[in-house]
Every structure is written in structure tokens, then in C-alpha cells.
Image 1 (cartoon, rainbow over the protein chains, first blue to last red):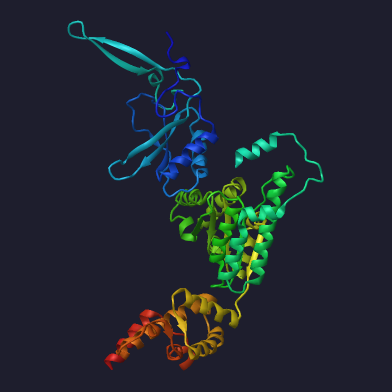
Image 2: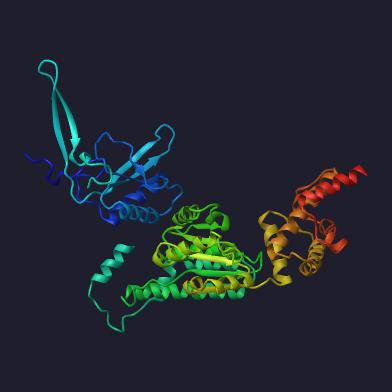
Length: 144
Length: 324
């Protein structure tokens, strides 16, 4: 049974929807800026769900008023890493929150091989499960 | 906004030539009159500048109406250069300009980011580009005001990083015309030299506005406006004294128009405070808000025909006097 045709990575917001257009991304960033969150662009080619810390593409952008600057940075990142996952994160620095309030993908590789499930038999009849991305069999930067 | 224009571009409707145009309604809807009035009220003199701003505003308004009629869709070049001597109100006008452009919908946010060479140019190789880009990103959706822009270009040092900054600026001024408006400001002769050696910059700037020096009468009006803002006023004799002060100060070196006037007033306030303190007896509210002739006439400009000292030097001098 194919539950996720195309093996599209589903992490962060909107990931079950078709890819966001630039206008939609701009609208989302506008919302983040309106709330005073610092927006940053990050990329990776290791899509494992527990890979939390992606590489930062430049510093987080503080004190911005308009999404155009961030969109420029996103497009720069897409140009540099056309076959990586790129996500936009909005960091909320409110005391007591201090964590990302938004995070969504803005770029994904053309072909996503998806994840395999490996089973390890251990004591008794116990089975341990591991999620493994087929892409990570290859070394970094050659995965997609 | 961009969505609505897309819709218009897609629709093949061509309006007949005699479609009525209501410029007045458009003008009222944009609320620019309010900004222009404020400009008139708060800025004394500067006739040519105000005329140019009015013209620019009219051009932008007509362009906007044309766009509605599906006439031309290219966005006009709005980058400007403000040239003039120190203290002629370049920064203030830039602030108003940002507001006007915002009301007309040519910039989305209407904020002003004011920078100088230090904010754009880095200290080592590879430092300049990220620094300039960060400033540009902050200014997007508003106006980037580069004060003393000619410092960006230093012809005597060919390895100066300023050139790199100029190249990035040029690229953004061309490619992100919808996102940001750049205003360069500086002294006339130095800016002319800057544009002469950077023809790319010159050709990308459509509006060159020259700020004239103020006349003595205009400076007097500015002084009164400044005092009124701080809840002070001249006594009659003080006004006479200040009217004498202005022409003398104008002939001295380092004269910076309105800025010199502001400094002179600041020193007068200092002397007024000293005088009130020394007087020591019961004061009234009137005493607190009135600047007397003696506060003005104590200036070195009157007594020795020299410049007044700055705050620190003055304190030092007082200290010395007290000792001897």
C-alpha cells in the first residue's frame, strides 16, 4: 500500500500540500515578520526526521520589515543547493517560548527516494525498528 | 498589490480613449496632500526642493492612474540623489519622501533606513558583501538613505572595499526596483565627483534634487520653530539679538545652516539655565520658557567674532576661570 506517493518528505508546516508558490511563501513570511519573529533559511541533504539541526544559510535575519529580502535569500539558497531540502524557520524570542514558531520546506530534491524500514530481531521475539533514508547511503552532497 | 496587477495584465479589456479620469479623487484617496502640507509647515524655505517633490508626487500619481487604465506597466525609477550643504534638511526630506512613496504605494512599508559608509563597507576581504546585503535586506519595502555616499568610493585606494559595496548596490537598484528605493545624499561638489567616477550610479538615479542654503530670514523662522517645539521662546530683545547673530555666524567657518542654529540655541538654553540658577530667587513659568537677549549676546560670536566652543571645551574653560 502506498500511503505517500512520490515519497514526499513531510516535515514542518504545509508539507502535505503541493509546494508553496513564491507568493504564498511571501505571505507566510509576512505573518512571521508581523509577529516579530526572526526568520532564517536552512538546508540539508539528510532528511531523517531526527536530524533537527540543519545547516544555516547565512545568519538569521533580524529587524526586517519586508519579506522581499528573505525571499531573495531563499532564492540564493535554492540556486546554491538546487537538490537539497531548504526550509524557512521563524524563531520566536519571547521569554518562555524561545523556540521556532514556524518551519516549512521551500525546496526539495527533484527525486525523493523515501525511507526504508529495517527490522532487527533481538531477545525473544522482540523486533526493533529503524527508519533509514535511501538517500543517505551515498556520501554528503552526492545524495540527490 | 502584485496580485491585482497580475489580474489586470491578464484581462484583455482595452478601455475607450474617452474614459473619464478622476485625478482629484485619486489624489484625495492617496492622502498625499497631508504629507505635502506637513512638509510645507515643518520645513521653512527649500522652494526648489518642495517643487521637485510636488512634481515627483504628481508624476507618480499619474503613473498610478495610467496603470489602472492598463496604459504602461513599467515601474518608474525612483532612486534619488539629494545634494546640498550640511544642515539643509536632506535627512528630514528623505523621511517625508519615504512617507509619500508609501502613500502612493511605491514602497510597501515606508520605513527609512539611514546608513553611512561604516554600515555598508567591511574591514577585511569577504566582509563587505554580507554587510551590505544585510543593510539592503533591512531596507527592503522602504527607503535606503545613504548619507555622505561619496565616501563609498575612494579613488586614492584601488583596493578599497567601497567599490564592492557600490557594485552590490547597483545590482540591487536594478533588479529589486520594486522592493526598495535608494536615496544618496551628500555635499554637491563631492557628489558630482562621485557620480563622475561612477557613471553606472549616475544613470540609475532619475531624480537629482539640490538643496539650497537658507537665507538669514529663513534661519530665523527655523530658530523660532525649533524653540516652539521645545516650549521655549525669545523675548523681544533676544529675537533682535538673534537676528544680529545669524548674519555674523553665517560668515564664520563651519557654518552648517539649520544645524548651526540648533547648536546656537542649545548653547543659549545652557546659558539661560545657568542664569536662572545663579539668580536663585523665585522664578515663574515665564522665566523657564523665555530666552533673554543676554543668553544670546554672551556668545563668543558677538564678543570676539569667533566660533562658540563646544560643551566640553566650555566646561573646561569655566573650570579654568574658576581656578584662576
